[in-house]
Image (cartoon, rainbow, N blue to C red):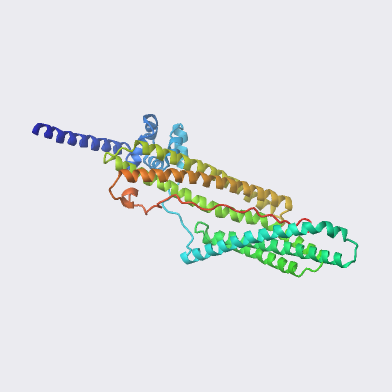
Length: 408
């Protein structure tokens, strides 16, 4: 019995020695990398590892910082192409954010929620006014040259309803711009210069719409209502493409921030899985889940990149179109459509991130069930600042806004 105990102890010692020897070999093979980074490289397979071994220290470090999906993609390239792509990798340890007080953020979010509620009310009111106006249209036409009291009442009702359509539409557009402005105010990922420029532009458009609304509110004749309606329509034709661009910047800032969090979460989980393996906890199935998470984040990043390319094209189009100080209606429509496509791709990226988050929730639950040792952020991130606890989610919906003034 004593011999069995001795043999068991010696076996444990031997296993420990072999494990440490393997770890030393691994870190010797990839100098300068943390253990979880070296293991992540090794999981690519021997053929791709040999390619990585040809990299210099700086290139190896950059390669190890990539996500699993990105590492897999780049390691399949020829050596020259791999080195070229790694030269483009920027090592960023922090991201400058706009300083916005928490009280201001909460206040801005409250104003956004209020504006959104009022926006929906105005849109419903416009639809009702248009419906009532349509119901009077046939009688209004029949009374075109009549002078009786009944026809006078019909004309007055028609003017009242059409006037209210213009007033509520102007209000709806003001609230739409207000929603965008409040989202910009509360977003720390939009820099001070852009935030100030967007706020000033929206303030100017709101002032124009307020003046047009006041003009519509006192309109007493059909021609005066039509004039006020045309003023509102003209303002929005000049403002809509710019509003779309401002709204896109909000969506881009939200999705870009979540992408950064997701990539940090992957690194954190990589370190945690290595921690578990060092304590002989089986996590092979969790590596598969993390691979799936990484692949879904990579899909999101690809869609997000396409989104930004489309937006840059829209910006270039806008600069060219406004060079003479006048953006035509067809140019504004083209810019608006380009920005809408960019926003659609950004929202697709956000959808991919939601799917990635669902994978991560399951992964986090599984690993917590296997490791009972409390871990600090410092243990998991080699001294980096604490990372977010979840990928997060945001509402990237931007309501379509049209002006239902035709026929007024």
